[in-house]
Image (tube, rainbow, N blue to C red; front, side, top):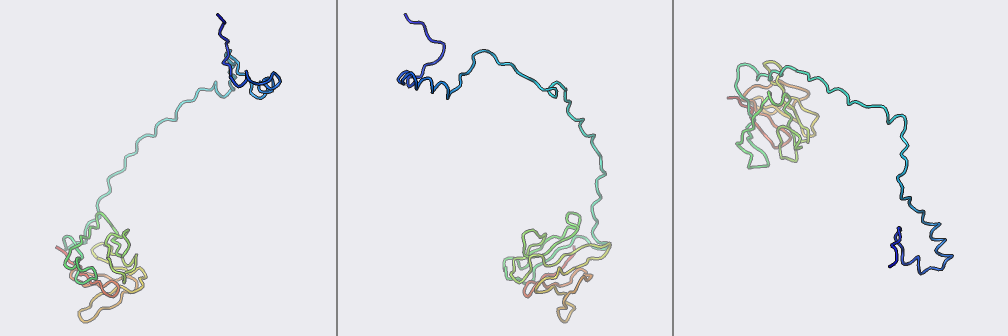
Length: 179
């Protein structure tokens, strides 16, 4: 019975001429069967310790921004808009959640107005102490406040009060109400 060879034999190598077999051996280096020596660098001997965990910092809970005094909650009620399904709908204005209420066509706004005549970032409403301030953000078709007779265009910022009628662009009209 023949003794098994310690290395696997490739059938292709047996079929090759002796010269070709020698060339194949030169091309494919032999793998040593003894354990190789591991050389370690001086850096591997240095023990590393994980950095200390940061100490927890405690920050006081910020107090919510209070609604302007004298009134309860504020809402924008749609009076007229190209999106007829929004007419008579109430949108809550929550200054404790959003200190700046952005108004515009883009979905990034707090109040989204689906009207092509409204700019992506059209206007913003803020509470400054006991006052509500409406600011036009250089919108293309303007922001307006109804003065009882006609709509006056807002240039910069203007104070608004409950029951003020606002117009964004050419066709979206809302009423600022409080409850």
